[in-house]
Length: 428
Image 1 (cartoon, rainbow, N blue to C red):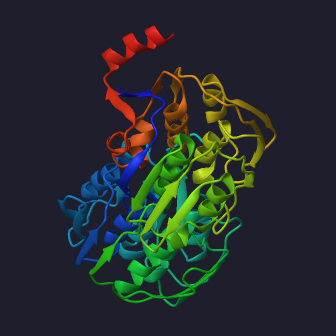
Image 2: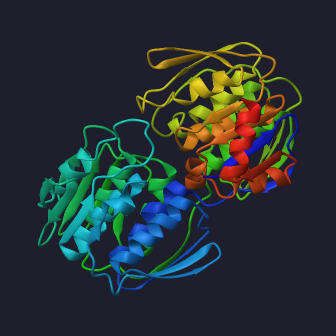
Image 3: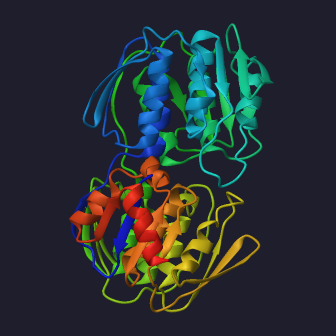
């Protein structure tokens, strides 16, 4: 199992290009199940989760032609209407095959999902919505079995705001009979990106970007071309890394219009930001100021950026309070950050971070995707060497992070299991 070895102390300088958004790419790939025509996608990120989704969809019979960051999908030969456990267990987004398969083929069998251990994240809202549209659903031996001769449009009010739930029900509604209204829908940019793709495929959707989506079902969707939006979480991660190291970096291929809350917090920390629609220059010449925040649904502060900003607060000049409201287990990185010399206490759903002037390298372990990014940021500023274990979490959501950071001047390399075991004992 590979690990990352990082020697801290280098200021990040230069330019970096941000990849396509993981959380947009995964549902958009599943949209290929909705049509028998070609769907041509660009700006696809090179991630383990994307590769897993591609493998899953191929197994269902979806044809793919991949060239670099572009892929052409064709759903004319989809015949295997199942997402098996061995492919779903590492990636929750596999549940997004449920809505498209059910609405187009009238049947689906999808394993209950796995993924990061950051909380329960139940799929009951997906099931409740599909049942309201007329699906017969049973849970058996860890699988969701769904059947419906034809889904019927209806009004669905979810008990909570759920991104994947909104995406699943939205895709299901495009081919349902009549009108479907999704109340309490997620407004995240990745949901908007999926909706815009579906419209280009012939879907009739109004209210895009709001909490009330109205979908008029159509008989058939056709092919389309679509560029996946830039990854706002990857952009925020690099911005935090530059701010922590006191660097000067230009980010390219970004969407500044969906990064408002992160940019505001970075300015509050003391970063100097120069932006236009597709680039951000960040300059940081001093120790960061502490920034407090509370995670919430878009357009509030994203839970997916909480760990990275916590890492920045670890070396801030003062105390910050971070309240997590989305996932109950999303403070697992606290223990690992404290191993590097951070001073973080947890009181209920709030982490109290007392900034310290320096961190010190040590062996640490990633517990989930965004936690792994926070450890990378902390390692970049820590004195000496940090060895990060379980970086398969990082590979799920970041496109060649160590390559991009190396190009900015970081001392970071991927090491094999045998080499890293020797280093682990040396670092002790």
